[in-house]
Image (cartoon, rainbow, N blue to C red; front, top):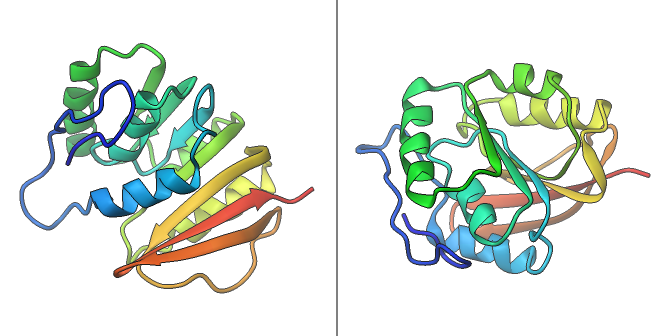
Length: 177
């Protein structure tokens, strides 16, 4: 894993051994940020299931105003903090909470990245909480990563795009007006 672009471009990130953790592939991450090009600078970002922090760290590298990293796994948080220590960034916070507890704390974000374990329903539940509580700014984007296409509706959010990269689907939502 590496940082693709921005002020920390090329920096290698610490990851996990084995297959239990599935970080967003560099190819998918690069495609994601090509779609979001020019919109990250100054943004308020929530990396809800942050794992090792690859997506949120990419946002920091590209000039995000603030990034809130959250993960329920203490092991993931330890690896994330190791990665953040390399960057010496001060415009980020880290919480070790269940996704619903993190979202219950409130806050409104320009970007929310949702990448739970693929077999979990936590991503759908997170989207429902985000839509219901209006946690996404007007014009902001929630990105849901998983291994199947999205079907259905989320109250308070509208699906605006979906892309497939190998076995990975990225589904983009905006706040309903």
